[in-house]
Image (cartoon, one colour):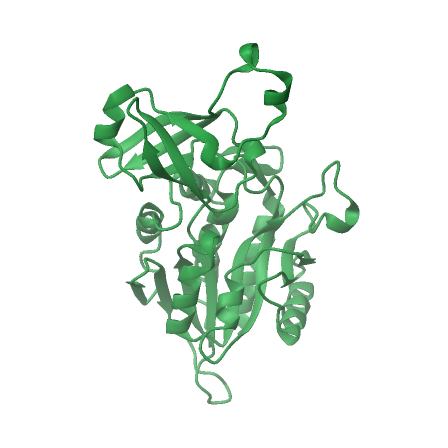
Length: 348
């Protein structure tokens, strides 16, 4: 398993609208894997692999599209005080309880600057009990880059801010910020590598999309351009198999395989496609679990609703502590997701 690639993907900053570094990293990794590679006006990376054999029934090749969003949740600088403290606006969904005392990276056109994020206000020694109960909103946090007034000369409104944490391996698990959704970028590369020289009859499109965390924006334009027959939303999902969460809300269990995602608030998967993938997974002995979410969305919805429509489903990896710097996946679940994507593309 290519953990080095996953580490580089996770540790490279890229929030919605600022995916350029991730795109360049992916471009350096996919040389020779695709027949055509383009960047669309929104910044999504569209990669095409032509069919390697003609369909037996003489029909046109089926278009299979993997949608793998590049962006991570983060912030954009919205204000810089005269003393050099930064205020930010979130791009993506944060629980403010996870933002206290974080190390961050402020990325500018001229370089990156390390900083720390804390809520404004008084520290524990001089605050009241009532003050300590309050959970600030994200726009009440400040970032200190240690420059004082000089910060206004080096940092601009709109510059990107990401969490600054390394990927680590613990037991059978991988922990990092931005596993949502750099695991999909990893899968979009590694599943194609796993295909090797297979004589697949389908035409494969892997779209590394932008701005998913703020409304599936890049996926909508990419899917409209490709007009797929089959769309796979490749993403994370919840793994709430942890203390304090009822069994009915756990969504997935670590180590029980990839998630075959059948519903969230953005789409309902095609029934026949769900059954087809389920049968293939059972035939290939690839572990899986069906998943549903009450809320949230993913790029598979954009494929399903593009142009005249497409059959769509989600292939997801259960992730504990999602939208934090301690996102955690199980290696076996990641491998299972890679195996089913490669198996489907080879068989399609």
